Picture (tube, rainbow, N blue to C red):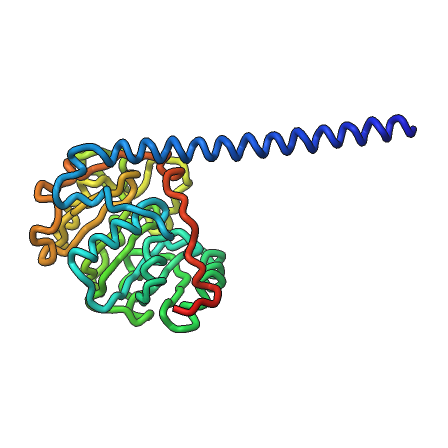
Length: 292
């Protein structure tokens, strides 16, 4: 019996060593993936066409955004300036990885909308400091083309705002098309990079559509979004390197500050999933005491 206990103890010790070794291997692999992704990102950004005047890709960085959106958004507003520093973003998740949290930390005010109660509860926990100061309003609702303008109005947001960010992994095109109650100066919206320009394609509108996280059936092609933007008075000014978000600026603000040859064809970026490992910065600790 004693011998069995001794052998069992030795076996557990070996398992602990194996577990430790596996953890070390995982950490090394994650580091190697990050280094490789960083190197590939830098190689792509060194391409001559991305150095052209007005291009946005090389300005990308991550603070709270999923990839490099924070840096591109900041560069756009550096060029065109801001007005009231208000934003609306829907499809915001728990708030720790979206396109307006970084602006919120710089004193902007705005509205977050998400259809999941768990996400809105997390927002109240993660950004309670902003909600308590009435700098941020968090609304739980599932947006449709029929209710989106009313929800904005009920939240007290109308007229011109600086930023609209659209990310619902499905009806993005249709929701942007339906918006009339606000006039954003800048729009950030996800596109389906599996449908390359010049192909026009928009998923059929379905009010309760929820992406399964795997299929390529979502949203619309960049070409279709570009044409919609043109109809609504916006110019496509760039896409981020990972091939996920398109950036639009109201035409009267564009002037000569963006790539002169900009179009869905020249600005398109393919989907690069590996870039998730290339942008891995920490979050700003605004939920803790600070003096400035």
